[in-house]
Image (tube, rainbow, N blue to C red; front, side):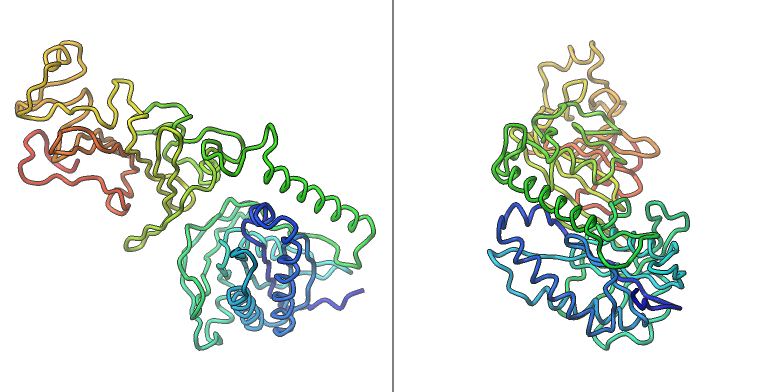
Length: 424
């Protein structure tokens, strides 16, 4: 029987980000990378007095008698991983989560919600990011290494945890400090034990682990080779689950709601299931930050802005997507002073409406400075114009709570707008 740390214990969970992708990229070399990752982490854990409770695949579960030693071990592990020269230019990143509690020791196991909370905190992180619970922060705040500091990320409701958790990001010199929004709905790392037993590994567990590893290897080979029903790595037109990519999805623009398959409020995980990983960047404004995913398909492209794991804006500069009235990028706008051969017909059919100022606008849209807009209390749909050619260059559907924060800004009304008052 192990002599597990008792009393107040700090739990540290780790998990490799993108392990399936690494397996696919490295093939047979993945085993060596995984072994080197284990060596670096175990050295850091041992240096902090941590006891390895369990490891499965590429995840660790470690207990520390002192919170500050757990934080020091996490920093040492991240630095060791970052300074190591990984083969084939691979970039191995590990997410980490820490929580301090007083779990019950039941023979060869820990019992308590604290273990589950620590695992959920780890799952919310991104590769290279270290997250601390508020409890751990309270204990270590005055004992941090000189080069380290904590950044308050605010309260978050973690999956399966009733009470919101205030989370803090551990920053230190030489380590990355900018990450996308937390993955609050992400699955738990593989070493995720609420009331698990921590005795010697049984033969059955070893056999199950071997089968899982074999299944993962087979899946990785299948992805790398590209079977009949598996997406090829070079097929940019399919998502990881065989779903559509931009240009192969529904071509509808629903004002105030969606462009193609992407709707406001959709989860990040659902977007990735549709289109794959995309190209990710970050956006920041005072008090807010999030990520932008860009996807390119055979006929179209989409830009999806996210905040707290939810879609808050979707935009396109591709003519593939169109409203029910046929408005799309490239359409000539009913702009003031520009003769339109279809104006009278469009007015008669209701496609266009005449504004009091003498300008015209597409039905339901109002004309503003360099744009047409349709707004309600929660969303704004904007058709951005190129004034030199007077055609639509971009379509934006935006959550109004973020319209002043996102990189693709909703135009503000300026002087010379005669058709309506207020913002676009």
